[in-house]
Amino acid sequence: MGCDGGSIPKRDELVKQKQKKVRMDPNMLSKERWTMCALSKRPLAVPIAACGLGRLYNRDAVIEFLLDRSVYGDGDVICSHIKSLKDVVALKLEPNPAVSEKHSSSPGHADQELLAQFICPVTRKEMNGKQRFVFIDTCGCVLSELALKEVPSQTCVQCGKAFEQDNVIVINPKPEEHEIMKANLAIKQARKEAEKDKKKKDKAAKKEAKREANGSSPKESSSSGSKRKLDTASEQDHHKKTKTSTTTLPIAPASATHALTAAVAAKVAEQMAANANRHKSLAIQSLYSSKTKA
Ligand SMILES: [Zn+2]
Image (cartoon, rainbow, N blue to C red; front, side, top):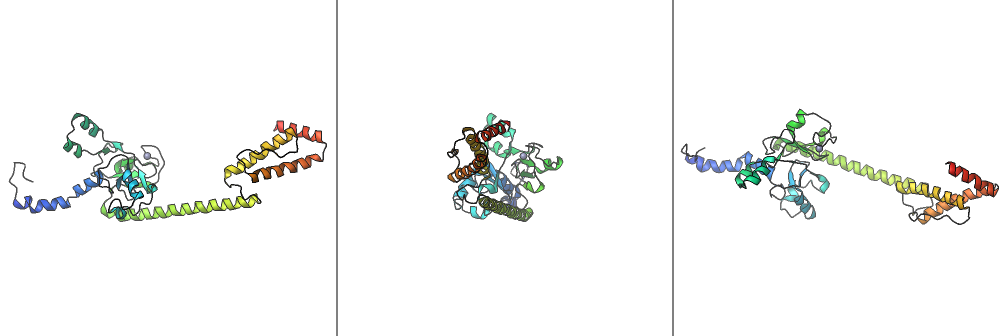
């Protein structure tokens, strides 16, 4: 192109053309997308995150943005699809060993900038925009697309976690892919919302069912843990009761609520009433033996 001493540059090469080229150079644009945080426009630094549209961010910048959506001028335009940290995936990137080697031997900045920070752990290709790279949104591993195609697998070749085709997100996709990715992301988000709704409804239904089952104990918490607690508590107290064979209320464990205690007491009282019909000592003996057998 000239200026290298071997040829005489033409005027348009130096003035008109050059300016045009700097502005339109897709490599320059591409390089920026691979080296700069799409949000803060600062150089990418670990920890790095990516969104469903395949953009790269400094995770710290995403957090800052979530705390104040106006902190990065156009952030709300670029990241309108990011509502929480769950909308980005923390990436697991393979550092480029050449970078650290160069760094220790010569701190030449120009050289450093030519090298990509990360490589594909399988093909060892640099992640500099010349190769297509993808990340898997279930585990966050970053690979070249080639590696994924050459080693077809239902589990991540890097960490072994299972994934499906729609978990593979292209990093910095071509402009023509952007709309497809946007549509895919919308579908995924809608599916997630539906799942969340379903979980909420299921939880509410379970809560309702348990409340009905427990009847007169509205204070009782309805988690499955407390149900188990109720069972073990009644068993323990029953055991205690039969052993001591006193008529006082059983001592509920500290974790049980008053309602729980009442429920257990009622159960034990019922048992005691039934036993009282028989000969007392016989009843106690039989309970003892049945307990020790069980
Ligand atoms: Zn993985």
